[in-house]
Image 1 (cartoon, rainbow, N blue to C red):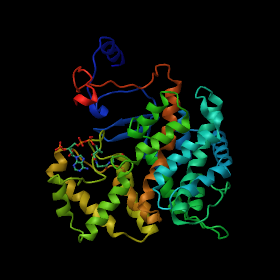
Image 2: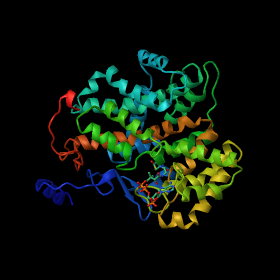
Image 3: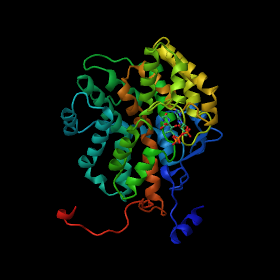
Image 4: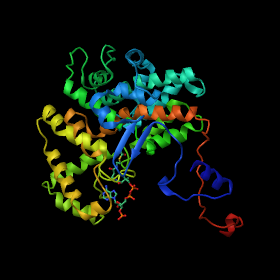
Length: 402
Ligand code: ACO
């Protein structure tokens, strides 16, 4: 395939493939997906095994370095991350400049972009020591930035990280804790969030990861590339879908919980009405991540919130859609986002914040792809072609003749 692609390019052929449905932009050894069978593996390990037995920090190591860490490697990695969680005091002042009701995704992206200004040693992507340092800085500081974006939106003071805590626990404390008040971490909530981060950690050449690679292919540094990836994730057809699902479920609830009427509106293709959290470019079968989340949603929701009416609507919606020809013919199944919003909501996160949680989970995947690309001798600057459909050559007319 790779050789044929090169030959066609040399012969001057252009592949017209809107949305890159059928274009392999790179080779990669990180994540394997079989969309027909509903299989997902990180570095060869089935997602089901990682979800059940691993942790987000271990999965981050696996994605970035290619192997599961030894005990010593995991300890070193964890302690390096916990030593870099603080934000520079000047970077903290950035948050004052944003409006109180700012969406946390652009706040997150801006602050990550600003890391390039605080750590100018990161500007050379060929300097492997600094790439390593930027990797640790990102894994450590992005949860702090995310927590501060939340605190800013509700007008509460920022909490310094507590480095005796694990990554997820620290994030929960900085998000929901208050200064001078002990914050008791709910282990069920921490475990659930850790699981959701594992499930979001990588998904090969999705829109945001492809963005990270495209920006990075110009040799832009890791912070700049990931800041762009965060903005790609912002869109409602990508990471923004988890918020959109919850808004959809709320609307159905407000209309009396009538899923039939809603499904009919989707089938009639009413403008802007899609079954959010359904369908996927690659999965033409049940998304394996959604399967795991659905299995645990009941348990998590009953532990954290004591049941949920929106979960009941979601389940009825899924059942209705999966038995309907419209969805069967188009192979539309629930994707990872269908149930996550309900869990995030039960944990106490506002809807706007859901996509930030997706970004926290996807971060190690973005880093792994950027690093893989930089080490790959086959990497070239990303530069797609086009089919020109504009005017043929014409002569310039002076203003008086137009
Ligand atoms: N609801 C209703 N119809 C749908 C949906 C949906 N959620 N998704 C696809 N379709 C229909 C389309 O209308 C189209 O039908 P048609 O041939 O009659 O016009 C057919 O299924 C194929 O859809 P495309 O839009 O061509 O599929 P594509 O691969 O381009 O889009 C996408 C994939 C963007 C995920 C789409 O399914 C969608 O919009 N889903 C809702 C948003 C969502 O949940 N996004 C999260 C994706 S997962 C992630 O980022 C983690």
